[in-house]
Length: 325
Image 1: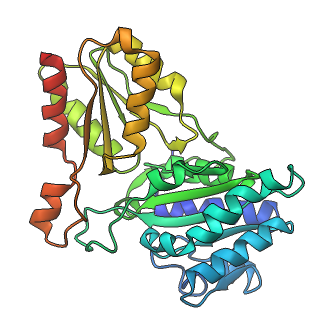
Image 2: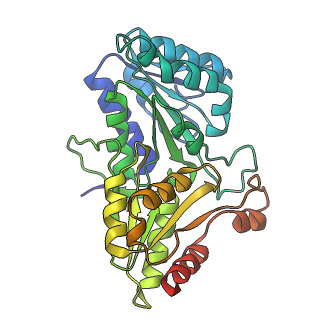
């Protein structure tokens, strides 16, 4: 099977959905002739023209608000934020409008809006360009939140997000745009809310998503050298969550370590821990363990960023701790 880059997989998904449905329209900063800051819209302006691939000024609240209006009136806008950190500027439109309109109007108005945004750290980009805000938006009813960790998932999940009649926040980790992976040339989609078991195992469940999926796989490989078989679950969507996959794994392994890049409080890892506590507590042979960012803004200094964000060594240590319990 051919291998392509993560950003190419996204561009392919956009092109295929634009070809399939003339109501799919794109806008954002520098997504036209420039091809986007991360190359994820390269070639689309030339193929579909300025009426469907539209450059916007630096006014995130304004052009995301336009996306809400466009979705409510029948288009399928895919809006790109150049950095996910600026999604806070758009929260009025996303949280107070897009997430609620379909419900408030009894389903008469649909909201097929996708907001794409680069997310995460590990690039020494500083506190204002390294955030991961998925927990904030997963908290809000009416929004789906997706974080693909491979080129295959990026394409399949984005196609499903565009076809969904609800608002989807599609977070793409900046560190993954240059990742290569197998992506079929034939048509495929991946359902939102369906986790993937990246590595089967019987001793401990490693539940993660996004960029830290790769860290967990590397940790599992290291642990296997000592006979510890970790099952790595990539959630892919954090809202909706694949509870069934998580619980089935925990009932098999009897231990769980949850790994996420962002902060621990009021987070996806908190929700996963609560689900396990409520529905599989009797199966646990050790307390739930979490590996997360430390509770500070992400530092600019590479050495400090490495200290603050999760790493392979920290994941291995956490697994050894629950195995020793």
